[in-house]
Image 1: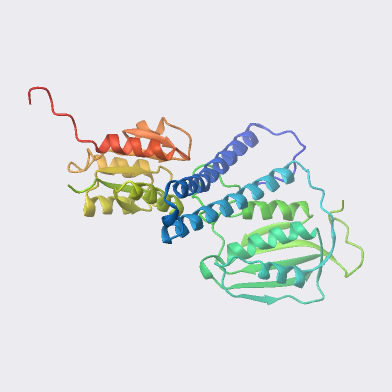
Image 2: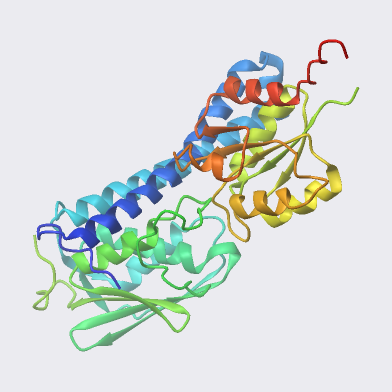
Length: 235
Length: 127
């Protein structure tokens, strides 16, 4: 898996090529929802007031809003990827209940995600930056639960770490790697969500892997209200 | 006279929907396909007058579709207009297209291209 966590070190020609291919993909991915948002808004402006208030108007408004939401997801994910690559977000690690973090992701899950089973002990705590952890878990739940797939979130302690396993729809090969120009488009706008989750895991002093049909997020373990283990990300 | 039939080929469902809305607003008949393989089936079934073709698609991309189409004597002359988000107009040449529109293109530019392609050829002088 490519390590994109270091932003400060010098980059070679291969890195430049990978980055160019990644940015090419992002540019391509942004143009589709940008197009539909523009066109649907323009069509709304062209139709008469009566039709605008009818079924066609509703359809165009829904298309416009869906495209803008997709665009927003892509843009936010991309900027966060860039900021993490540049080392521009110092994670603020604190003890976070693994169960509460997972429950939050379940609460926020997109409508196309199926039922989610939560098997996480209330005694397990992670050393993590809450907002970043939430973004990573949201990405994993959305990916594992695509197309109405039922999801299971389990967690276990492993030495100084906690392993959060999210299973459901099996990860595709290379799912965590940066997409490049030519990678199939994602009509949900989540094309960058897993590469972003990989960056977040690394920024929090952990790792994200995809194997055996599930995603495993490994993060430093913490005690409730206590000190973080060595290696946990600090401001 | 029936209005021209436009086949729109794109893997993005929102793009498909939006372009079909644009064409429908000008009373074109529309057919749609999500990839090149589906598009070949639609060509067989519906005999479109013009094809709006995305290039990057799963299953069968736009270049492979155009190659397959050009190898079919009955369909090789169906005009293709490339609609792509890849920002490389030179790729239109690779599918022998009548034009290239980079997303997000202007609605009127699309309609103007389609109207030009669908306009009956001027009778030759003396014909």
